[in-house]
Length: 403
Image (cartoon, rainbow, N blue to C red; front, side):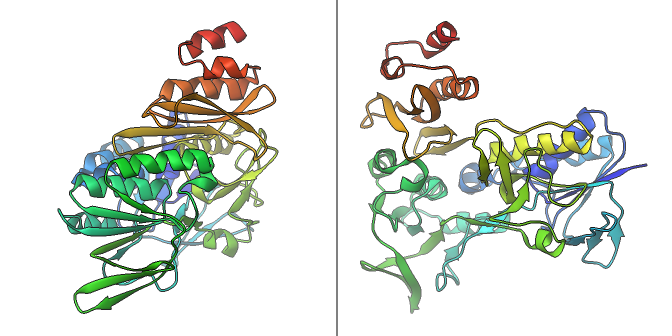
C-alpha cells in the first residue's frame, strides 16, 4: 500500500488530507506536526480565539474524522529530513517513514526584533501564546502593538474589545503602505483611530526594558510605558527542513506552478512555498489562509498524478474594529487606482487597473465588489473606470453585460 506524508500541523496538511480522501486515495496518510496539538487553524488566534478562548473554531482534523478516514496524526514530532535517495521521511526519534510522496506545509514563524523579548512581550503565532496574551488583556491594560499590519490591526481590535488601551507603533509613514499603498493604509488607520487606538507612525521600536514593575518601550520618538507588548512585524518561512533535505530555497521553498519542489515526489504549499504563479510571471510567497488552502488542494491532486496548475488570484481578509477588509489580486506600482465610494466613509472599494484590466482590489465592508473583482481578474474582461466608480451601478449586472 502506498503512503503519503503531510508535514505540518496546520491548514495545508488538513486540506491536503481531506482532498486526498475526497478524490479517492485509499493509501496511508500520515500527518506529522511539531506542536503538541492536533492540526489547528491560526487566523482565530488574533481574533475569536484571542477574544474568548473558543476552541471550536480551531480544530481542523477532528479525531472522529481521522478515525473514520483512517488518517494517522502524529503530534510533538519533528521531521529532520526527506531523503533525496528514496523519499524516506526521517524523524527526530530516530525512526523513518517510507513515503511515495511528501507535502511540506511547515508554515512560518513570527519575525523577531533583537532586544524586544522577555516577560510581557508576545509574538502571536501559537495557541499557548494566545492563551497567555488573552489572560493579560484586561480592562485598562496598556498594550503597545509593534507593527501596523493586518495582524497588528486584528490584535489591536481584540484588545480594545477586551477593554485595553492600545497604542500601535508603525515604523513607516503609513500603516499597511507596503501591502495596499499609502492612501488606503491611511484610510484603514482611521478605522483604528475611530475605535480609540493611538496610532503613531514613523516610530520604530529600539528596545524594551523593565524598571521595577514597569515595562518601558524605547522608540525613535521617545519612551512609553506598557503592561503588554505585542510584536507583529511579519513572518519568516520555516525552510530548515527543506534546506536539510537539499531542496531549492529562495525566500521560501521554491515550487513550480503545480507546487512541486526541486526534489521528485516532494511538494510544498502555504506560507513556506515560494510559488511560480503563471498569472504573475514570477514567484511569490503568500502568507494567507485561502492561499494555503488552495495550494494544498492543488498539491494533493498533483500527488495523485492529476497535473493541476495553481493560477488563481490571491485573496485574503481581515476582520477588525467591526469591519471586514478584503483584498484580491496583485497590483503593480504603475497600476492606477479607481475608488468606488469615499475613503473617508466606512464602506468603499479601491480597484487597481493596468490599462482597462483589473489587477487587484481592496475593500472595506464591500465583499461583493471583491467577488466581482476576482471575476474580472481571472477573465481579463476590459472595464471602464466610470463603471467601477459608479456606486449606483450593480457590478454583477455590469459584469454580465461585459462578458
